[in-house]
Length: 116
Image (cartoon, rainbow, N blue to C red; front, side):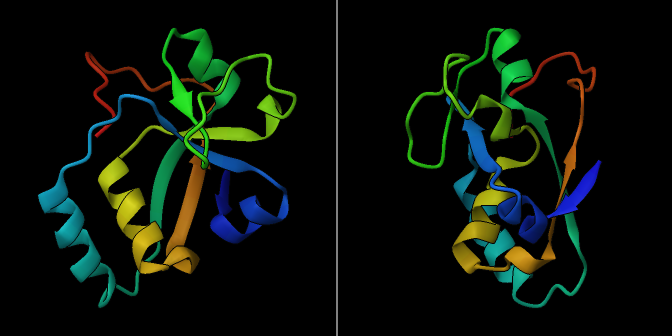
């Protein structure tokens, strides 16, 4: 299911990040520059936090607090699992109207997830 960032905000979803996600600062700067001239929409993948945590990975919410399956709002939390550098660049440049979130029901198969 694909939703715009505005729809996700209106439905009170909270976008979270993997706790040990890796961000490439060089790419972050490049993305920030490119976002100023980009007119296309950008789609990133997210997964429900409960499913992410069930795989043994840890995530933090938008306040930097570690999330657990005991959180009362766990059903409203989504973890970004694709291109964290791009997501952070979008948030810093406030180009949120270009962002679409593809909410997947299972983690796409890959050999190793490093959450770049």
